[in-house]
Length: 180
Length: 356
View (cartoon, each protein chain N blue to C red):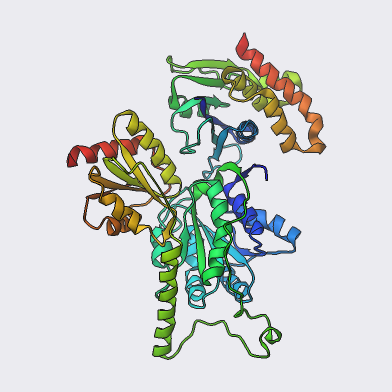
Protein backbone atom coordinates (compact mmCIF):
# COMPACT_ATOMS: atom_id res chain seq x y z
CA UNK A 1 0.00 0.00 0.00
CA UNK A 2 1.45 3.31 -1.06
CA UNK A 3 0.59 6.29 1.05
CA UNK A 4 2.37 9.61 1.23
CA UNK A 5 1.64 12.08 4.02
CA UNK A 6 3.41 15.29 3.15
CA UNK A 7 4.01 18.59 4.88
CA UNK A 8 5.12 21.41 2.58
CA UNK A 9 6.22 24.60 4.30
CA UNK A 10 7.88 27.92 3.59
CA UNK A 11 7.11 31.60 3.64
CA UNK A 12 4.26 33.20 1.72
CA UNK A 13 5.13 33.61 -1.97
CA UNK A 14 7.40 30.56 -2.26
CA UNK A 15 4.61 28.57 -3.85
CA UNK A 16 4.17 26.04 -1.07
CA UNK A 17 0.38 26.03 -1.41
CA UNK A 18 0.46 25.60 -5.18
CA UNK A 19 3.15 22.92 -4.93
CA UNK A 20 0.79 20.98 -2.68
CA UNK A 21 -2.16 21.57 -4.96
CA UNK A 22 -0.27 20.30 -8.01
CA UNK A 23 0.72 17.15 -6.17
CA UNK A 24 -2.88 16.64 -5.03
CA UNK A 25 -4.24 17.28 -8.51
CA UNK A 26 -1.72 14.87 -10.05
CA UNK A 27 -2.73 12.20 -7.54
CA UNK A 28 -6.37 12.68 -8.49
CA UNK A 29 -5.50 12.36 -12.19
CA UNK A 30 -3.89 9.02 -11.37
CA UNK A 31 -7.09 7.88 -9.61
CA UNK A 32 -5.52 7.96 -6.18
CA UNK A 33 -7.23 9.17 -3.03
CA UNK A 34 -6.04 12.66 -2.17
CA UNK A 35 -6.55 15.58 0.18
CA UNK A 36 -4.98 19.04 0.54
CA UNK A 37 -5.28 21.10 3.69
CA UNK A 38 -3.76 24.57 4.02
CA UNK A 39 -2.72 26.32 7.18
CA UNK A 40 -4.83 29.44 7.45
CA UNK A 41 -3.59 31.03 10.61
CA UNK A 42 -3.47 34.80 11.19
CA UNK A 43 -0.31 35.18 9.10
CA UNK A 44 0.76 38.13 7.03
CA UNK A 45 2.54 38.37 3.70
CA UNK A 46 6.05 37.03 4.16
CA UNK A 47 4.92 34.98 7.16
CA UNK A 48 5.04 31.20 7.23
CA UNK A 49 2.61 29.02 5.29
CA UNK A 50 2.22 25.29 5.06
CA UNK A 51 -0.06 22.65 3.65
CA UNK A 52 -0.74 18.98 4.33
CA UNK A 53 -1.09 16.66 1.34
CA UNK A 54 -2.11 13.02 1.42
CA UNK A 55 -1.85 10.79 -1.66
CA UNK A 56 -2.94 7.23 -1.02
CA UNK A 57 -4.16 4.00 -2.58
CA UNK A 58 -6.68 3.77 0.26
CA UNK A 59 -9.40 6.25 1.27
CA UNK A 60 -7.88 9.19 3.12
CA UNK A 61 -8.60 9.19 6.86
CA UNK A 62 -7.74 12.39 8.65
CA UNK A 63 -6.55 15.07 6.21
CA UNK A 64 -4.27 16.41 8.94
CA UNK A 65 -0.71 15.20 8.69
CA UNK A 66 0.69 14.57 12.14
CA UNK A 67 3.34 12.02 11.14
CA UNK A 68 4.82 12.99 7.79
CA UNK A 69 6.35 10.47 5.41
CA UNK A 70 7.93 13.53 3.78
CA UNK A 71 8.47 17.14 4.76
CA UNK A 72 9.52 19.72 2.18
CA UNK A 73 10.92 22.83 3.87
CA UNK A 74 11.61 25.99 1.94
CA UNK A 75 12.94 28.20 4.76
CA UNK A 76 14.59 27.95 8.18
CA UNK A 77 11.51 28.42 10.41
CA UNK A 78 9.87 25.55 8.52
CA UNK A 79 12.84 23.25 9.12
CA UNK A 80 12.76 24.02 12.83
CA UNK A 81 9.00 23.55 13.02
CA UNK A 82 8.56 20.39 10.96
CA UNK A 83 11.69 18.22 11.00
CA UNK A 84 10.37 16.60 14.17
CA UNK A 85 7.18 15.60 12.38
CA UNK A 86 8.94 13.28 9.91
CA UNK A 87 8.57 9.55 10.63
CA UNK A 88 11.64 7.33 11.06
CA UNK A 89 13.18 6.58 7.62
CA UNK A 90 11.00 9.36 6.20
CA UNK A 91 12.22 11.99 3.77
CA UNK A 92 13.21 15.59 4.52
CA UNK A 93 13.83 17.90 1.57
CA UNK A 94 15.69 21.06 2.55
CA UNK A 95 15.96 24.15 0.36
CA UNK A 96 19.67 24.68 1.01
CA UNK A 97 19.74 27.99 -0.90
CA UNK A 98 17.98 29.58 2.05
CA UNK A 99 18.73 27.16 4.90
CA UNK A 100 22.35 26.96 6.15
CA UNK A 101 21.49 24.65 8.99
CA UNK A 102 21.66 20.85 8.80
CA UNK A 103 18.85 18.73 10.15
CA UNK A 104 19.28 17.51 13.71
CA UNK A 105 17.64 14.18 12.81
CA UNK A 106 19.86 11.19 12.04
CA UNK A 107 17.10 8.61 11.57
CA UNK A 108 15.64 10.06 8.39
CA UNK A 109 16.74 10.53 4.79
CA UNK A 110 17.57 14.20 4.39
CA UNK A 111 18.40 15.85 1.06
CA UNK A 112 19.74 19.34 0.56
CA UNK A 113 18.63 20.93 -2.68
CA UNK A 114 19.71 24.46 -3.65
CA UNK A 115 16.28 25.13 -5.14
CA UNK A 116 16.54 28.92 -5.43
CA UNK A 117 19.97 28.71 -7.09
CA UNK A 118 18.74 26.14 -9.59
CA UNK A 119 15.62 28.22 -10.30
CA UNK A 120 17.79 31.31 -10.84
CA UNK A 121 20.02 29.37 -13.25
CA UNK A 122 16.91 28.42 -15.19
CA UNK A 123 15.94 32.08 -15.25
CA UNK A 124 12.90 32.25 -12.97
CA UNK A 125 13.13 32.33 -9.17
CA UNK A 126 9.44 31.49 -8.92
CA UNK A 127 10.00 27.90 -10.01
CA UNK A 128 12.08 26.97 -6.95
CA UNK A 129 9.01 25.11 -5.71
CA UNK A 130 8.95 23.00 -8.88
CA UNK A 131 12.60 22.06 -8.33
CA UNK A 132 11.64 20.71 -4.90
CA UNK A 133 8.59 18.95 -6.31
CA UNK A 134 10.78 17.30 -8.97
CA UNK A 135 13.11 16.00 -6.27
CA UNK A 136 10.15 14.77 -4.26
CA UNK A 137 8.52 12.72 -7.02
CA UNK A 138 11.91 11.32 -8.06
CA UNK A 139 12.40 9.95 -4.55
CA UNK A 140 8.89 8.66 -3.93
CA UNK A 141 7.42 7.91 -7.38
CA UNK A 142 4.06 8.67 -5.83
CA UNK A 143 2.92 10.42 -9.03
CA UNK A 144 4.56 10.78 -12.43
CA UNK A 145 6.18 13.92 -13.82
CA UNK A 146 3.66 13.76 -16.66
CA UNK A 147 0.73 13.98 -14.22
CA UNK A 148 2.30 17.01 -12.54
CA UNK A 149 2.69 18.73 -15.91
CA UNK A 150 -0.87 17.77 -16.87
CA UNK A 151 -2.11 19.35 -13.64
CA UNK A 152 -0.02 22.43 -14.24
CA UNK A 153 -1.59 22.85 -17.69
CA UNK A 154 -5.04 22.80 -16.11
CA UNK A 155 -4.05 25.28 -13.39
CA UNK A 156 -2.21 27.70 -15.70
CA UNK A 157 -4.78 27.64 -18.49
CA UNK A 158 -4.06 28.11 -22.22
CA UNK A 159 -2.78 31.69 -21.86
CA UNK A 160 0.18 30.60 -19.74
CA UNK A 161 1.01 27.34 -21.50
CA UNK A 162 4.33 28.84 -22.59
CA UNK A 163 5.50 28.39 -18.99
CA UNK A 164 5.26 24.59 -19.19
CA UNK A 165 8.76 23.92 -20.63
CA UNK A 166 10.59 25.87 -17.92
CA UNK A 167 8.54 24.12 -15.25
CA UNK A 168 9.40 20.76 -16.79
CA UNK A 169 13.08 21.70 -16.69
CA UNK A 170 12.72 22.64 -13.03
CA UNK A 171 11.19 19.24 -12.23
CA UNK A 172 14.05 17.52 -14.05
CA UNK A 173 16.75 19.54 -12.31
CA UNK A 174 15.18 18.75 -8.95
CA UNK A 175 15.16 15.05 -9.82
CA UNK A 176 18.79 15.26 -10.87
CA UNK A 177 19.77 16.92 -7.62
CA UNK A 178 18.67 13.90 -5.58
CA UNK A 179 19.90 11.30 -8.07
CA UNK A 180 23.54 12.33 -7.72
CA UNK B 1 -19.27 13.73 -14.58
CA UNK B 2 -15.53 13.59 -13.90
CA UNK B 3 -14.13 14.40 -10.50
CA UNK B 4 -12.86 17.90 -9.81
CA UNK B 5 -10.55 19.08 -7.05
CA UNK B 6 -12.30 21.71 -4.94
CA UNK B 7 -11.98 23.55 -1.69
CA UNK B 8 -14.85 22.84 0.71
CA UNK B 9 -16.21 26.38 0.73
CA UNK B 10 -16.20 26.59 -3.06
CA UNK B 11 -17.72 23.13 -3.36
CA UNK B 12 -20.62 24.27 -1.15
CA UNK B 13 -21.21 27.15 -3.55
CA UNK B 14 -21.03 24.88 -6.59
CA UNK B 15 -23.39 22.38 -4.96
CA UNK B 16 -25.89 25.15 -4.20
CA UNK B 17 -25.87 26.24 -7.84
CA UNK B 18 -26.29 22.60 -8.91
CA UNK B 19 -29.31 22.43 -6.55
CA UNK B 20 -30.74 25.45 -8.39
CA UNK B 21 -30.15 27.89 -5.57
CA UNK B 22 -30.06 31.30 -7.23
CA UNK B 23 -29.84 33.70 -4.26
CA UNK B 24 -27.08 34.11 -1.72
CA UNK B 25 -26.94 36.75 0.99
CA UNK B 26 -24.00 36.96 3.29
CA UNK B 27 -21.09 38.74 4.85
CA UNK B 28 -17.57 37.26 4.64
CA UNK B 29 -15.80 35.82 7.67
CA UNK B 30 -12.83 33.45 8.05
CA UNK B 31 -12.84 30.46 7.61
CA UNK B 32 -15.91 30.57 5.33
CA UNK B 33 -15.06 33.51 3.05
CA UNK B 34 -14.38 31.49 -0.10
CA UNK B 35 -18.10 30.63 -0.16
CA UNK B 36 -19.32 34.20 -0.78
CA UNK B 37 -16.24 34.84 -2.95
CA UNK B 38 -17.11 31.87 -5.17
CA UNK B 39 -20.80 32.72 -5.41
CA UNK B 40 -20.14 36.41 -6.10
CA UNK B 41 -18.34 35.20 -9.22
CA UNK B 42 -20.54 32.26 -10.19
CA UNK B 43 -24.14 33.22 -9.34
CA UNK B 44 -24.36 36.07 -11.87
CA UNK B 45 -23.35 33.59 -14.60
CA UNK B 46 -26.58 31.62 -14.01
CA UNK B 47 -28.74 34.75 -13.69
CA UNK B 48 -28.65 34.46 -9.93
CA UNK B 49 -28.14 37.15 -7.33
CA UNK B 50 -25.20 37.43 -4.97
CA UNK B 51 -25.62 40.14 -2.40
CA UNK B 52 -23.05 41.11 0.17
CA UNK B 53 -25.24 42.37 2.97
CA UNK B 54 -24.32 45.19 5.33
CA UNK B 55 -24.48 42.76 8.24
CA UNK B 56 -25.31 39.17 9.16
CA UNK B 57 -28.66 40.33 10.54
CA UNK B 58 -29.52 41.88 7.20
CA UNK B 59 -28.40 38.76 5.33
CA UNK B 60 -30.60 36.37 7.32
CA UNK B 61 -33.62 38.62 6.83
CA UNK B 62 -32.94 38.84 3.10
CA UNK B 63 -32.92 35.04 3.15
CA UNK B 64 -36.33 35.16 4.90
CA UNK B 65 -37.63 37.36 2.10
CA UNK B 66 -36.26 35.30 -0.77
CA UNK B 67 -37.40 32.00 0.77
CA UNK B 68 -40.81 33.55 1.45
CA UNK B 69 -41.12 34.35 -2.24
CA UNK B 70 -40.46 30.67 -2.98
CA UNK B 71 -36.88 30.95 -4.22
CA UNK B 72 -34.10 28.54 -3.38
CA UNK B 73 -31.78 30.68 -1.29
CA UNK B 74 -28.82 30.33 1.02
CA UNK B 75 -26.70 32.21 3.51
CA UNK B 76 -23.47 31.22 5.17
CA UNK B 77 -21.03 32.41 7.77
CA UNK B 78 -18.83 31.22 10.60
CA UNK B 79 -19.65 31.03 14.30
CA UNK B 80 -19.79 34.70 15.43
CA UNK B 81 -21.69 35.56 12.25
CA UNK B 82 -24.13 32.69 12.80
CA UNK B 83 -24.78 33.97 16.32
CA UNK B 84 -25.85 37.28 14.78
CA UNK B 85 -28.32 35.41 12.56
CA UNK B 86 -30.12 33.60 15.39
CA UNK B 87 -33.12 35.92 15.64
CA UNK B 88 -33.72 35.52 11.90
CA UNK B 89 -33.34 31.74 12.06
CA UNK B 90 -36.04 31.56 14.74
CA UNK B 91 -38.34 33.70 12.56
CA UNK B 92 -37.60 31.51 9.52
CA UNK B 93 -38.41 28.38 11.52
CA UNK B 94 -41.60 30.04 12.83
CA UNK B 95 -42.70 31.12 9.36
CA UNK B 96 -41.75 27.65 8.03
CA UNK B 97 -39.47 28.85 5.26
CA UNK B 98 -37.25 26.41 3.37
CA UNK B 99 -33.64 27.54 3.04
CA UNK B 100 -30.07 26.43 3.65
CA UNK B 101 -27.73 28.02 6.19
CA UNK B 102 -24.03 27.15 6.23
CA UNK B 103 -21.92 27.39 9.38
CA UNK B 104 -18.18 26.79 8.95
CA UNK B 105 -17.51 26.62 12.65
CA UNK B 106 -14.47 28.27 14.28
CA UNK B 107 -13.22 28.48 17.85
CA UNK B 108 -15.40 30.34 20.35
CA UNK B 109 -16.92 31.73 22.48
CA UNK B 110 -16.88 35.39 21.50
CA UNK B 111 -14.61 36.26 18.61
CA UNK B 112 -12.59 33.19 19.60
CA UNK B 113 -10.12 31.95 17.00
CA UNK B 114 -10.32 31.32 13.27
CA UNK B 115 -9.32 27.65 13.56
CA UNK B 116 -11.71 24.67 13.19
CA UNK B 117 -14.12 23.88 16.00
CA UNK B 118 -17.35 21.99 16.76
CA UNK B 119 -18.44 24.13 19.67
CA UNK B 120 -21.62 25.33 17.90
CA UNK B 121 -23.31 21.91 18.28
CA UNK B 122 -25.68 23.09 21.00
CA UNK B 123 -26.54 26.26 19.10
CA UNK B 124 -27.29 24.32 15.91
CA UNK B 125 -29.17 21.34 17.36
CA UNK B 126 -30.91 22.76 20.41
CA UNK B 127 -31.94 26.09 18.91
CA UNK B 128 -29.74 29.17 19.15
CA UNK B 129 -32.76 31.40 18.73
CA UNK B 130 -35.89 31.56 20.85
CA UNK B 131 -38.89 29.28 20.80
CA UNK B 132 -39.54 25.58 20.27
CA UNK B 133 -38.00 25.10 16.87
CA UNK B 134 -35.66 22.70 15.11
CA UNK B 135 -33.37 22.91 12.14
CA UNK B 136 -32.26 19.85 10.23
CA UNK B 137 -28.50 19.82 10.92
CA UNK B 138 -26.24 18.02 8.44
CA UNK B 139 -22.61 17.38 9.39
CA UNK B 140 -20.42 16.12 6.53
CA UNK B 141 -16.97 14.57 7.01
CA UNK B 142 -15.57 15.02 3.50
CA UNK B 143 -15.92 17.42 0.60
CA UNK B 144 -17.88 14.79 -1.34
CA UNK B 145 -20.34 14.34 1.49
CA UNK B 146 -20.56 18.12 1.88
CA UNK B 147 -21.59 18.49 -1.75
CA UNK B 148 -24.10 15.62 -1.52
CA UNK B 149 -25.66 17.03 1.65
CA UNK B 150 -25.91 20.60 0.34
CA UNK B 151 -27.74 19.35 -2.75
CA UNK B 152 -30.04 17.08 -0.76
CA UNK B 153 -30.37 19.76 1.93
CA UNK B 154 -32.29 22.04 -0.43
CA UNK B 155 -34.73 19.19 -1.12
CA UNK B 156 -35.13 18.42 2.59
CA UNK B 157 -35.81 22.12 3.22
CA UNK B 158 -38.46 22.22 0.50
CA UNK B 159 -40.06 18.94 1.52
CA UNK B 160 -40.68 20.06 5.10
CA UNK B 161 -40.71 23.86 4.71
CA UNK B 162 -37.89 24.02 7.23
CA UNK B 163 -34.45 25.60 7.48
CA UNK B 164 -31.54 23.19 7.00
CA UNK B 165 -28.10 23.88 8.42
CA UNK B 166 -24.86 22.56 6.98
CA UNK B 167 -22.57 22.33 10.01
CA UNK B 168 -18.97 22.21 8.84
CA UNK B 169 -15.77 23.40 10.45
CA UNK B 170 -12.59 25.18 9.38
CA UNK B 171 -11.08 21.98 7.95
CA UNK B 172 -14.16 21.20 5.84
CA UNK B 173 -14.21 24.80 4.59
CA UNK B 174 -10.52 25.03 3.77
CA UNK B 175 -9.41 21.62 2.54
CA UNK B 176 -9.46 20.37 -1.04
CA UNK B 177 -10.63 16.92 -2.09
CA UNK B 178 -11.90 15.43 -5.35
CA UNK B 179 -15.67 15.71 -5.77
CA UNK B 180 -18.32 14.61 -8.18
CA UNK B 181 -21.62 16.46 -8.52
CA UNK B 182 -24.32 13.82 -8.52
CA UNK B 183 -28.10 14.12 -8.61
CA UNK B 184 -29.70 13.57 -5.20
CA UNK B 185 -32.20 10.76 -4.53
CA UNK B 186 -35.45 11.89 -6.16
CA UNK B 187 -38.01 13.37 -3.76
CA UNK B 188 -41.63 14.27 -4.37
CA UNK B 189 -41.59 17.92 -3.41
CA UNK B 190 -44.82 19.74 -2.56
CA UNK B 191 -45.75 22.81 -4.64
CA UNK B 192 -44.90 26.14 -2.99
CA UNK B 193 -48.53 27.22 -2.88
CA UNK B 194 -47.77 29.52 0.04
CA UNK B 195 -45.09 31.65 -1.63
CA UNK B 196 -45.66 35.39 -1.87
CA UNK B 197 -45.42 35.76 -5.60
CA UNK B 198 -48.37 38.13 -6.14
CA UNK B 199 -52.12 37.49 -6.06
CA UNK B 200 -52.23 36.38 -9.71
CA UNK B 201 -50.94 33.02 -8.52
CA UNK B 202 -53.62 32.60 -5.85
CA UNK B 203 -56.84 33.79 -7.52
CA UNK B 204 -56.63 37.19 -5.88
CA UNK B 205 -56.32 35.73 -2.39
CA UNK B 206 -53.49 37.23 -0.40
CA UNK B 207 -50.70 35.09 1.01
CA UNK B 208 -48.89 36.15 4.17
CA UNK B 209 -45.56 34.88 5.47
CA UNK B 210 -45.51 35.49 9.19
CA UNK B 211 -44.55 33.99 12.52
CA UNK B 212 -46.86 36.12 14.68
CA UNK B 213 -49.81 34.35 16.33
CA UNK B 214 -50.99 36.87 18.88
CA UNK B 215 -53.62 34.60 20.47
CA UNK B 216 -52.01 32.07 22.80
CA UNK B 217 -54.22 29.23 21.56
CA UNK B 218 -53.38 29.96 17.95
CA UNK B 219 -49.69 30.11 18.81
CA UNK B 220 -49.98 26.78 20.59
CA UNK B 221 -51.66 25.27 17.51
CA UNK B 222 -48.78 26.54 15.41
CA UNK B 223 -46.35 24.86 17.82
CA UNK B 224 -48.25 21.58 17.68
CA UNK B 225 -48.14 21.71 13.90
CA UNK B 226 -44.39 22.29 14.01
CA UNK B 227 -43.91 19.38 16.42
CA UNK B 228 -45.86 17.05 14.13
CA UNK B 229 -43.56 18.08 11.30
CA UNK B 230 -40.47 17.53 13.43
CA UNK B 231 -41.68 14.02 14.32
CA UNK B 232 -42.04 13.32 10.61
CA UNK B 233 -38.47 14.53 10.01
CA UNK B 234 -37.22 12.34 12.88
CA UNK B 235 -38.97 9.37 11.29
CA UNK B 236 -37.62 9.93 7.76
CA UNK B 237 -34.37 11.81 7.75
CA UNK B 238 -31.91 10.31 10.22
CA UNK B 239 -28.51 9.62 8.64
CA UNK B 240 -25.51 7.96 10.23
CA UNK B 241 -22.53 5.74 9.51
CA UNK B 242 -21.66 2.84 11.74
CA UNK B 243 -18.96 0.19 11.53
CA UNK B 244 -17.12 -2.37 13.60
CA UNK B 245 -19.64 -2.28 16.45
CA UNK B 246 -20.10 -6.09 16.65
CA UNK B 247 -17.43 -7.49 18.94
CA UNK B 248 -16.06 -4.05 19.78
CA UNK B 249 -14.75 -3.29 23.26
CA UNK B 250 -15.51 0.39 22.94
CA UNK B 251 -17.68 2.52 20.65
CA UNK B 252 -16.23 5.83 19.53
CA UNK B 253 -18.59 8.54 18.38
CA UNK B 254 -17.55 11.59 16.43
CA UNK B 255 -18.97 13.70 13.63
CA UNK B 256 -17.53 15.84 10.84
CA UNK B 257 -13.77 16.03 10.46
CA UNK B 258 -13.22 14.66 13.97
CA UNK B 259 -14.67 11.34 12.78
CA UNK B 260 -11.83 11.02 10.27
CA UNK B 261 -9.20 11.64 12.93
CA UNK B 262 -11.05 9.03 15.00
CA UNK B 263 -10.93 6.53 12.11
CA UNK B 264 -7.13 6.88 12.10
CA UNK B 265 -7.15 6.19 15.83
CA UNK B 266 -9.30 3.07 15.32
CA UNK B 267 -6.69 1.71 12.87
CA UNK B 268 -3.88 2.28 15.38
CA UNK B 269 -5.93 0.60 18.12
CA UNK B 270 -6.60 -2.38 15.84
CA UNK B 271 -2.84 -2.86 15.35
CA UNK B 272 -2.48 -2.93 19.12
CA UNK B 273 -5.21 -5.54 19.45
CA UNK B 274 -8.00 -3.26 20.74
CA UNK B 275 -11.24 -3.44 18.79
CA UNK B 276 -13.09 -0.14 18.61
CA UNK B 277 -16.31 0.42 16.69
CA UNK B 278 -17.81 3.66 15.54
CA UNK B 279 -21.13 5.45 15.31
CA UNK B 280 -20.90 8.64 13.25
CA UNK B 281 -24.01 10.82 13.25
CA UNK B 282 -24.43 12.55 9.87
CA UNK B 283 -27.66 14.28 10.88
CA UNK B 284 -27.03 15.92 14.25
CA UNK B 285 -30.70 16.77 14.37
CA UNK B 286 -32.55 14.49 14.03
CA UNK B 287 -29.98 12.57 16.12
CA UNK B 288 -29.51 8.80 15.61
CA UNK B 289 -30.31 7.89 19.25
CA UNK B 290 -31.40 4.37 18.22
CA UNK B 291 -27.98 3.50 16.82
CA UNK B 292 -26.43 4.27 20.20
CA UNK B 293 -29.17 2.29 21.95
CA UNK B 294 -28.42 -0.69 19.68
CA UNK B 295 -24.67 -0.44 20.18
CA UNK B 296 -25.15 -0.23 23.96
CA UNK B 297 -26.87 -3.62 23.88
CA UNK B 298 -23.83 -5.37 22.37
CA UNK B 299 -22.30 -7.53 25.13
CA UNK B 300 -18.66 -6.95 24.22
CA UNK B 301 -19.05 -3.16 24.38
CA UNK B 302 -17.72 -1.90 27.70
CA UNK B 303 -17.90 1.85 27.15
CA UNK B 304 -18.58 4.75 24.80
CA UNK B 305 -16.30 7.67 24.05
CA UNK B 306 -17.51 10.84 22.35
CA UNK B 307 -14.73 12.78 20.62
CA UNK B 308 -15.37 16.38 19.72
CA UNK B 309 -13.72 19.70 19.00
CA UNK B 310 -15.66 21.17 21.91
CA UNK B 311 -15.71 20.85 25.68
CA UNK B 312 -18.51 18.27 25.56
CA UNK B 313 -21.71 18.91 23.62
CA UNK B 314 -22.73 15.95 21.43
CA UNK B 315 -21.80 13.70 24.36
CA UNK B 316 -25.11 14.72 25.98
CA UNK B 317 -27.04 13.20 23.07
CA UNK B 318 -24.80 10.11 23.11
CA UNK B 319 -25.73 9.68 26.80
CA UNK B 320 -29.44 9.98 25.94
CA UNK B 321 -29.02 7.25 23.33
CA UNK B 322 -26.95 4.93 25.52
CA UNK B 323 -29.45 5.61 28.32
CA UNK B 324 -27.31 4.47 31.24
CA UNK B 325 -26.65 1.00 29.81
CA UNK B 326 -22.90 1.60 29.53
CA UNK B 327 -20.57 4.34 30.77
CA UNK B 328 -20.12 7.27 28.36
CA UNK B 329 -16.83 9.17 28.35
CA UNK B 330 -15.77 12.34 26.64
CA UNK B 331 -12.59 13.58 25.01
CA UNK B 332 -12.36 16.99 23.40
CA UNK B 333 -10.06 19.78 22.32
CA UNK B 334 -11.26 23.36 22.13
CA UNK B 335 -10.65 26.78 20.69
CA UNK B 336 -9.51 25.58 17.27
CA UNK B 337 -7.23 22.70 18.29
CA UNK B 338 -7.86 19.49 16.33
CA UNK B 339 -7.28 16.29 18.33
CA UNK B 340 -4.56 13.95 17.06
CA UNK B 341 -5.14 10.20 16.59
CA UNK B 342 -2.62 9.27 19.30
CA UNK B 343 -4.43 11.40 21.88
CA UNK B 344 -7.60 9.41 21.17
CA UNK B 345 -5.68 6.11 21.37
CA UNK B 346 -4.31 7.09 24.79
CA UNK B 347 -7.78 8.08 26.00
CA UNK B 348 -9.26 4.75 24.88
CA UNK B 349 -6.52 2.82 26.72
CA UNK B 350 -7.12 4.86 29.84
CA UNK B 351 -10.86 4.14 29.73
CA UNK B 352 -10.51 0.41 29.01
CA UNK B 353 -7.88 0.10 31.72
CA UNK B 354 -10.41 1.51 34.14
CA UNK B 355 -13.55 -0.40 33.13
CA UNK B 356 -11.96 -3.81 32.62
